[in-house]
Structures are given as structure tokens and as C-alpha cells.
Length: 529
Image 1: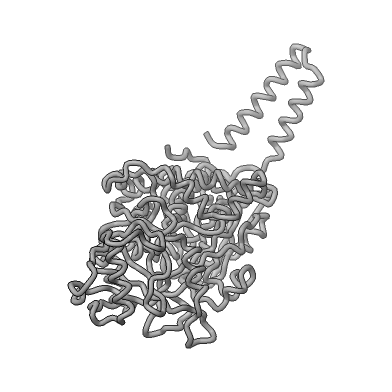
Image 2: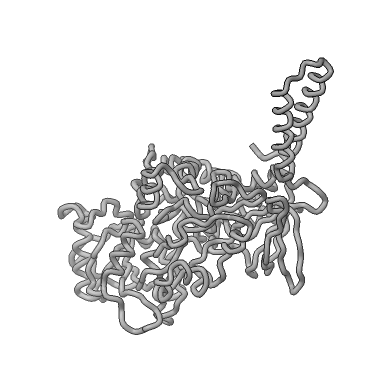
């Protein structure tokens, strides 16, 4: 039953009860007061956007969060119009390369992980100071960090298995990433990285539905509102101005690529850092124009490994060197060819460790460091779905061990002995060595390894618009902005100080599915079970 029908039914029931009491001449002053109060509250609520010939679910942005929400809304019977300012869909999601987290999946059990109960604790630990202070002070602010995190982590198994069973994406390979207690980051065994595989699979399904329409090159310029509720959007397309009525979801991503705009406003210290995000303006000001609150806007993630392209070493735009390269066994070496850190530490820890070293010389405009990522043949095979692309782009090269610097060879031998158990535990605390199988000594000198140069890069913005466990956008006092939803990197409050690798795609799916069902419900269609 739609929300409007529920409200009308409740109102008529109250009025009929009052009429019956009047006929019996037994009505009391208190009953009249209750009836008046009920009528006032119901009539004061902004009316829901009802289904009509012109109303539609409006999804702004074509990344994984928007695609997931669109799919769920369509399943519920709602029409969907997706507006994307880019020429091609997929956003930053299509570039996601490490995978999607899932705790307790059947794919974990297939590799011997029979129980995974630590995902929530790992996420809280990664969220750091912001979560701790929120918890210790009784949960102030518009967002409930604990609830958001619990919905994410407890919904992860269902999200991964739904993607496999419903959308048809292979996510059978499970790897360990930094900050995770166990291997829980899923990707496919094929050539497509997980982000591209998910985006292409969703687009293929969505385009089969006649109720779905994607408008590329559509720039949303404003939100329309009435009686405190968002009622639609204004946008331009092919030089024409348009208005569209319906409940709205923002899935427009973060502001890591808005170097001279939102990033410069909230983190001016990062202006000289290269980035993995597309150069495009942030959209948060549009959300605050209708009363939305922003949280954690100065919380920006520096990813420790973005590739340094030998052909354009000081480009401000970098390809991400996927965390799975380290998860499958790869190591990091400093400018002297030495290991200096546990490669599976959290992203913020790794980045800080690298950035504590002396930056590389060569450019005053771009700040970067001289770090090498190196994989042996075992790790290379396990990461083959990514390596083919990286080698094709010239970002990584295959070399024989004997052709490397003597200091690098020494580090390889030392690490190989640690993996083989010939020496004490890793001095940097690494316990998971992925698929590394290279032995130490002369027998390895003709073996091939894969090497590439990497540096820290601006990667992800944890801050964004406040939202709740129903994906509804919130005001500063915690009240809902009616008719407005959000999911993905445009939101804030979920990841705190630092996001775990593999949780960006996950939040898009978990909260995108929720948003899709909620949006369809506003239009008066029954959400899917």
C-alpha cells in the first residue's frame, strides 16, 4: 500500500470515529483535541509524489550506486530516468579494480574461510577517530555511523550473492586487502576488472527494460521543491533546458577530481597531489540548497599506490595500482630498493608511511614519491586479469630477477625466505603472502617478476551528504529531506577517517538497492521483497 493511501485511510478512519461519537453525544473534549491534532499532523506532511503520466524515478549519475538503484526500482514496477553528465556511463565505478567486500559468502567457504565475523569491527577500526568520537559522545550529528556500518557489513553477503545470482557477474575469486582480518574482497576470474564487469552487466540488463531511459550528456542544474519536499530536477541536454518530476536519487560520486572546487575548499593541502578521479565539479552545493547537511568533508582518502606512467611521469591523472596486486603477494620497495612497510596495512597507514619519506625530484607542480611495486610469477598469475592491461599501458614491465638492482634482489631474497618460513616472522607484521612462490638464491635469477612505479594519489572522499539507513538525505537536525535519496561516494558518515578497500562498490550495491526500493515506493508501486 502506498504512503498516501495509508495516510488517507488513517485520516478517514479518525474522522468516521469522531462522527460516530458525535451521534452518540458521548464525545469528550479530549477526543476532539486528539482528532484535531491528528488532522493537523496529517495535513501538514508534504504530500508524496504520486504516480502520474509524467512522474518517474530520477537517478542522477550512472555509477554502480545509480545502476543498482535503477534496477531495483524497475523490479518494483517504477519507470526510471537516469541523467548522467558524462558522454559514457559508469562513472568512477567502472574503473574499480580490487573488488567488492562480502562477509560470510559461499565463495569464502569455497576457499576455506568458514566464518567471517570481523567485518564490522574491521570497518569501525578503519573509520578511526571519527567513529570513536561519535561513539564516545553518544552519537551526535545527523548520521548514525553505527547503523550505517552495520547495514553495510551485515548486508554484504546478500549483496555479493545477489550480484552473482541475479545480475550474472562472476565474483568467485576472493583476496585479502589491507585492513581486513580475512580475505573477503571478491572479483571475477575473467579479464574484466570487477568495476567494469559490474557496470557492463547492469547496463545490459537495464537497457532491456522499456521503462528505463539513460540520458547521457545531461547536466542537472537544480532541484525543484514544494512544501519542503524535493519534487524533481532541472537539467540541460543538447542545449535545451528540461524539467522532470519525481523522487530524486543522487549517485554523482565524490569530489576527489574537483581540484579547484570542492577539494580546494575542504582540503587545500592536497591541491598538488595527483588523483585517480575524473576531473569534474562536485555536486554537494546542489544538495545543500534544499537543506541537506554535509559531514566529514575534510576526510579525503589518499590511496598509497597510483601508477607513475613512464611516458608521462608527472601527469596529475593517475591509473590506480589495484590493492589486489599487494593482496596476491606483491611487495613495496622504497627508492633504495628496500621493503619498508607491511603491504597489507590500511590505506591511510601506508600512505602516511610513504609520504613521510622524501618526495621524488622532478616537478614542482605535482608532489609524488619513488616507490616500486613488485610481484613474483605466482602473484602475477593470480593478478593476471589486471596485469594484461597494466603491461599493455606500459605501467608495469616484466623483468628477470638478475636484471634488477642488487638491492632489489636482496629484498626479494629476504622476502622469499620469510614466505618460505626460513626466517622469523615478517618484521613489518605481514601474515598473508598471497600467491608468492618465488624462492631465494641463485635459482630465482632467471625467473620473471612484474614491476612498476607507484605513488600516493587522491582517490576517494569519505565526506559527503548526510544520509540514513534508508538512503534518505538528512538535514542538520537529522530530519529527512523528503523526496531526496543518495548512495555511493556522494554520501558521508559511513567510512569516517578511512575507507576499507572493497567497500566502495559494496556501499553502492547495499544502499543503491535500498534507495531503489524506497524511490519506487514513493511513486506508489510495491517494492520488491
